[in-house]
Each structure stands twice: as structure tokens, then as C-alpha cells.
Amino acid sequence: DIQMTQSPSSLPASLGDRVTITCRASQDIGNYLRWFQQKPGKSPRLMIYGATNLANGVPSRFSGSRSGSDYSLTINSLESEDMAIYYCLQHNEYPNTFGAGTKLELK
Amino acid sequence: QVQLKESGPGLVQPSQTLSLTCTVSGLSLTSNSVSWIRQPPGKGLEWMGVIWSNGGTDYNSAIKSRLSISRDTSKSQVFLKMNSLQTEDTAMYFCASLGFAYWGQGTLVTVSS
Image (cartoon, rainbow over all chains, first blue to last red; front, side):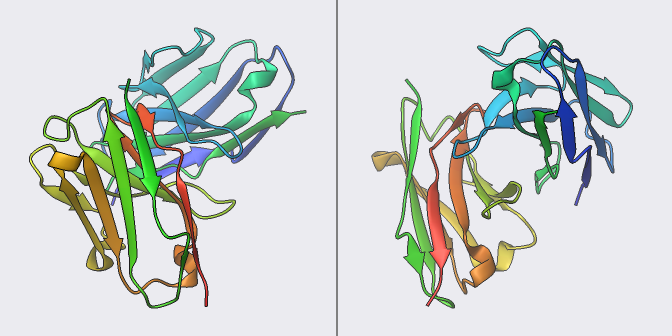
């Protein structure tokens, strides 16, 4: 199975900060990488698909990028509503695998 | 408007079989796949399996021997069955479709005697 190593597990940040979360794939997954945001008691929300494409309705301060086997989610100018847990998902091979999650919280 | 809704028993006894239903609206099961994902309390997401538009399936190898996903296209329903449940199977169970752009609200399953 493909392993997705997500870091950091916890990310304290201040409003207005620029933050980056990274997932490293253990095998080639091309651009078959999605990012999700999950708030307490809610279902995950798709934020990024195809590694770099913004999902419908997602604010433009979110962006996705790829460098080799490293995939990143960047949030520019953090807002309070961005505090959540973020997960990556590879869907290049089965089983699909999620990263362990990054909890973004106020410093 | 695309909607998915999970339903199930809530409480299952250890060693018993879990049966969940995902009822979809606004999309056709013959044109779209539906995945099941679970999340133990306070933990991360685990992809369980998928049923494709042609009825084929793929499963997480870790639970493949216990898991079955099927559907009734006439009722727009997808079914999950998992046997030999243990306490570690306690989780919120979600169904999702359209490239994980649409999720149900989840149904909590507790495995306990």
C-alpha cells in the first residue's frame, strides 16, 4: 500500500500567517492527490483536487503544489474559519490512503 | 442537488455483522462511484472501499476479508456489510461520491456488548 506521510501533525499559527502542510508519497502517485478540511463534528470538505486545483467554493487563499513526491497545501493569510484538521488523500492506487492529518490551531 | 445519507444500527455487538446503507440523490449510481470511509473517535480517516459505476468493487486490503459493498441502483442505495466486528471498529462511517466532493453526514457505529 502507498504510505502518505503528512507533516506536521500539529501546527500552531496566528491569524494572517501563511502556513504550509506537506504530504510525502511512498510511491509515485502522479497528481492523484486531494486535500480535505475537517471541522469538529463535520464531514470532510474537499479543498484541492489533482494536487493543484481548487475545489468549488474554496477561497483563493488556499493553494496546492507538488515537488516530486512531496505535495503541499498552503494557506495564505490565515483566517479563524481555517482552523481545522487537514488530510491528504492519494487515489492513484487501491487502497486509497489518507495522511494522518494536521491540526491547524491558533497560537 | 447531490446528497448522500448514511443509515445504520448505531450499536453492534462484538463478533456481529454491521450493515449500513448510503442513500444517494441527485446522482446516478450507474454513472458514479461511491466510497466508504470511516473515522474512529478522535482519529484519522480510513478509506474502506469503493463500488464503481459498473458495480465492480475495490477494498482496503486490511479489512478486505470482512468487507462487502453492494448496491441497489433502483433504490439509489449502496450497502456496506462488515462481519466479525470488534471494539476497534467503533467509528463514524461516511459514504462519499463525485471524487470525494460530496459526503454524507456520517453515522456513528459503536461496537459494544
